[in-house]
Length: 279
Image (cartoon, rainbow, N blue to C red; front, side, top):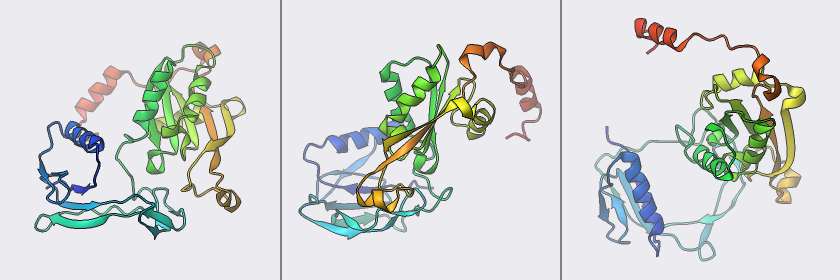
């Protein structure tokens, strides 16, 4: 089956964004993207696109139109009605009987931006690495829009390590601050992408008396359905963040109960013997 590609070519005088999009798409596919020159804008259009739209988008101050409320990734209608940029469509190109996938922004699990949180987890992990904090083993972001609950796996190296990581992550826009509510720090034996494993750590390694911090005043988004009317009217787009340490206590980690888990070798043998059951 053909892959659906919808391409909107807008004028970019420097061409930097167009070049980045081509390079990113080529990297994902593992080969250069074949393009054709747009007859109207002169911008590159993927040659295998199912649908392509060519046009021009003037600055918002020159032309904008009211839009909304719009169904958003949160699963709610949000933002009310406001002026948004427009595109003056000059041409539409398409294959015969083009494939067009619908992706209505319905409440989860019916709508997701990406199968994996490439737009949040990657940036958050990169920023944590740049900060110089050691021991980061993995980052994943769960919830609507892959934004709400950031999970960070670490190898603990010193007392307070988990709390340090969680606090820093809560201040970072991508995956931590913007519409994110929860930052969960787990041990290195927990896969942050496996929500069941994260939930197991949350329910067995987290002491609510000492392991949960609520910090107010962080940036959120107008799309946040929990913003009360008075804050929305004042454009006070702030919320609280919850930092949850689900790591085994560092100062008595050696006395912590051992995990009841089959050896890797035994697990491998079972999977090989009954592979049809676990496929």
